[in-house]
Length: 307
Image 1 (spheres, rainbow, N blue to C red):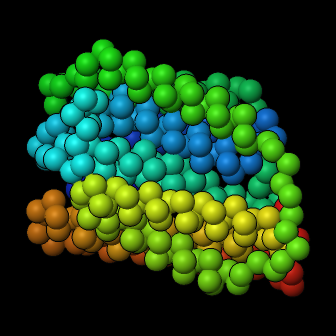
Image 2 (cartoon, helix red, strand yellow):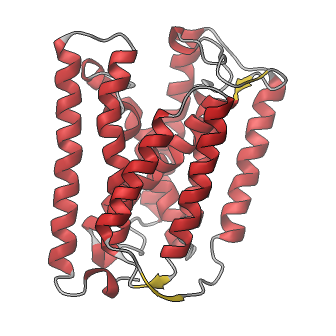
């Protein structure tokens, strides 16, 4: 829902496709969350696995990373890397976009809704197996459908390269995701400040100019936000409301971004605007519910009582 409908990639008129998209998006996010929690890893692992997920989707499944005219749009004119047959700008937007908005944001918000089981597995072995099968089936169906529609197939070196990098990212995710966290004897910023900064930086990332300057700007924003979150999460008091604020700020960027993207895609009929309003309203309501859940679960100290 977040990466396609809320963002405006798919209009509300395409809501019929949700059951076909859910196994790949929802199944992928749930698999990443379950594997991470079962192995005792944390958010670094989730985000890096999200990068691998994004690369697999954009590089192997829908192949938008390599298709120069995906869905009839020019996809390789912004910061092109001719030797690789891709756009550096879109590669960054697709892969990071999936990691943050398709994987990280949904996991963070849903975990907030069940604070008592935030870091524990939700599925048994059968559930995990079923989820994995659904993800694979959803991915195969997506590949076949887009292959038929686009009549495009990336080159063998491109496919192998994407697969190798994805496997490397998976290895990195588990190699670095369980390092001991050294706490800093400083207070965390207020949740509203975390949320505001998340909203502003994610908005700047979303709206960066489609050029090499835009690529550099996106990388600068990623570096800045990564450094801030790594430092903040090690301070005393970092917890539930901060994580929700961080995810919520990013979610709201896609809420307003959906209106922009819908217009850029030339969808001017009222039904598309109505869809944007419905999806954005749903995102806001979800954040309100999650915030109330957090306040009710931790009425006094809130985030201090969550690891």
